Length: 354
Image (cartoon, rainbow, N blue to C red):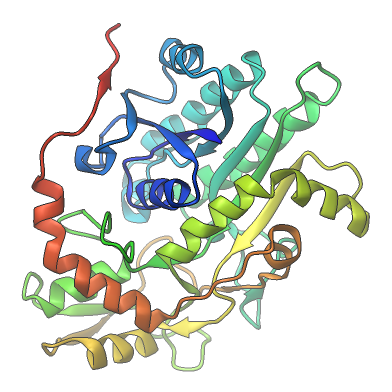
């Protein structure tokens, strides 16, 4: 299939593009390059622009009328930035997505796979969450994901009596780590906020120390607990959602959910690892020692959660296969080639001219 991939120059989006290509599909990338590097679009059909640019989105579908689905990754994703600049996150993540969805509906594009987040969940006592667990997003970033889910669900429901009813799958990501095993893409931000990037910075001397932010949570060692999923497993979940799109809704109907049009699905490893445990594992894999410090909680952080992935297994036939140790191995391998990959020239760009 040919698929539109918004945010396809980002870490998760570009890795998913590689997984799609490996499976025989053709991604058409739409990205503003506000954060994602142009190098990650090399050799792909690429349109440089914003998802809220209706004229550009219409042009893409006019030039590629065989696009079968839209994978929507484009979003701002830094929690601390969202706390400092909430208007930016609501404008770009929510309003921008609404404009995109309205354009898709007008074009009769009926299949959407949305990049959501497990940060929308509350932290239950046992920290295990399924798709029916209570929601409690703690940051503007997380709230923007919840709002977009609700908005997309409403649009799908309202379209069911139209000639082109829309259906959507929201993949609720837990914590992606690692890099593409073939090293085509990986983390690219110079000063990353995600945990493995901060650990890598400490190991390479780019940061003085790694700080554990929060040691007073109700977890087995007081540090936050997360579900760390290898980025390649996460990419494969999108391929499974694309290829099994119809089957997922059929499975939901067989389980008694009726004719649903919006389907949230957890995508994680199904295991909980504390920050302190991850630091210990990273230290064992790192060729250089790291200095670890303890600090206060960050705004918007929670005790965390880990995924019940039963629905992903039943509806998509997907389960995570790679380990945190393998994610670390790929992360170290990516760091060795990151500069070379990002500095390579020659991105194939189809530039939109207003």
